[in-house]
Image 1: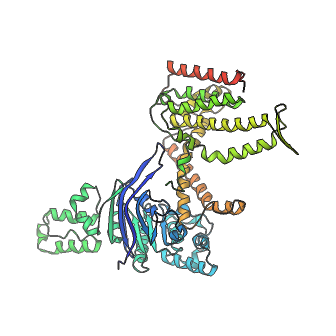
Image 2 (image 1 turned 45 degrees about the vertical axis):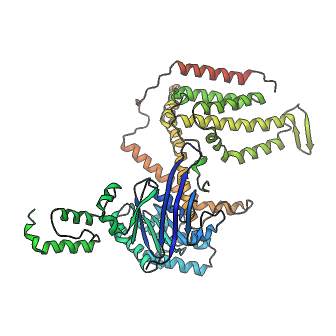
Image 3 (image 1 turned 90 degrees about the vertical axis):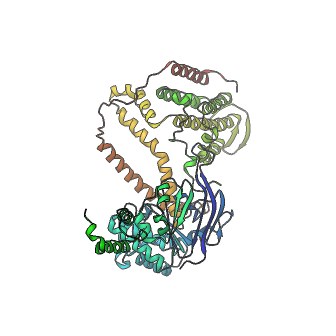
Length: 295
Length: 280
C-alpha cells in the first residue's frame, strides 16, 4: 500500500513577518515523511504550526531553511514550476465553502481545470468525476445556484473544485469542522474511498480523534513548531504517558476501554476502531465477569 | 524569504503595537487632537525646510514610541505607485498653475518650472509624513482608546444633533477591520492560488483580464464582509447595544501635565509650520 516517499521534509523552519514587531516563529525544525498512497493525520494544539506546515506542501509558503521535497520538486530552490506543484498537490483550506465565487456549481468546480487550459470536453469529464467522488449528482446539481446550498453541500462543492485538478496529494485543513454529524460521516467516507480506491495520498489536519482513528494510517503530533511524536494511531493512542505530556485527546472508544481496564476487566486497549471496541465490550459483557458488573 | 502572500506585513493602519512607551501612555484625546492639527499644518506648508522638519518629527515620533521606523515605512510601500503617478501628473500639468520661478523646460502645454518641481517633491514628502504620522497614531493607540478620543472630541457637535457616537463607532469599526480583511484576503488568495488562479502575472495593459483575475477574490471577500457584518450586529445586539443611548465608559481619561505639555509643543510646532516664512 505505501509506496515510495512523496513528501520529504527535514528540519524545516519558518518565521512569519520577519522584520516587524509581529514576527513569530511558526515552525522550528519539523521533519516528516509521507509515502505514496498513505493517509496521514496531523494533530496538535492551535498555534503548533500545523497550518504553516501544510501550506509548504503546495508552495504557498516557501521554507526559510531546511529540506522540503514534494513529489520530486525541491522547494528550497528559487525557481520551481509552481503551477505543476499546485496541480499535483490539492490544498483544501479551512471552511473551503468561502472560496466559492461562481453562480453555478458546475462553473465553480470547472474553474481550476479551465485555468489549466484543458479542452472543454476534458473539463466536463473532470467536473463529472469530481462531483461523483464527493457524492453530488452531476446532471442534477451542475446547474444549481451555489448560494442556495447547505453548509455540508457547499463544502462538497469546494472539495470537488480541488479534486477536479486531479491532484496526486490531497491536503485538508480540518475538513469536517463545523459540519453536522451526518455530513461529517459522509465526508469522511468520501475521503477514505479517495484514499483507498483512487490511491490518492491524503494528509489532513484534525482535532477530532475519532476521525483520526477512522482515517489515518499514521499520525504526526505537532507541538510548538516541531513534530514531537509520530506513529500509527495504535502507537499514539496507547502511549498513555506521552498522551498526557502533549495533552492529546483520545477517541472515546480508547477512553472507554481504558476505564474498563482500570476497573479490572481484561480488555485490549489498542482496539480503538468502533467495531473492534464494540467486540471488546461484548467480550466483557458475555464473559465470566458479567456477574461482577454490579454498577 | 518573504512569502508572496504575506499581505498583512504591509498594512500598518489598524494594527496596535503595545510597547508601553511615553507616546502610548499619552491621553488619546490629546494625541488625536495634536495629530489633526499637525496633519493640517503639514498639508498647508509648501516649503522644503518645513516639510523636512515635518519628516524629522514623524521619524522622531516612531523612535519615541519604540516602534521600528522600518515598520512604519513598510506601510508606505503599497502607496508608492500612487505617489509616483501623482508626481508625474503634477510635473506635466501643474507648471502653468504657479506664476514665477525659473522655467527649466517648455514644450507645447508641458511647462516645468522650479515651482512645479517644488510642488512635486513637497507633495511626495508630505504624503510620506502623513502616512507615518497616522501610523504612529494607530500603532500606539488601541481602537478602544481611539473611539473614546473621537467621541469626546466630537461631543460638542451633539448640540447641533450630529450623531457623534454613531460616527465614532463607524470609524472604529472601519479601522478595526482593515487588518482583519487583509488576513481574509491573504487566505482567499492562497485558496484560489491552490486552484490554479494567478494574480498579476498577465501583461499590465490587459486591464480587463487582470480585473477578471481578481473576481475569485473579490466576490468571496464581499460575502465574507457581509456575513462578518451580520455576526457583528448579532454580537452587539445580544449584548444589548442600543444606538443613541447615553453610555458610561470603563476607563475615564484625565489629561495630566505631560499631556498639556505635549499639546503645547505640538501646537507650537504646527504654528511654526503654518506661519514661519521658511526661506526655501
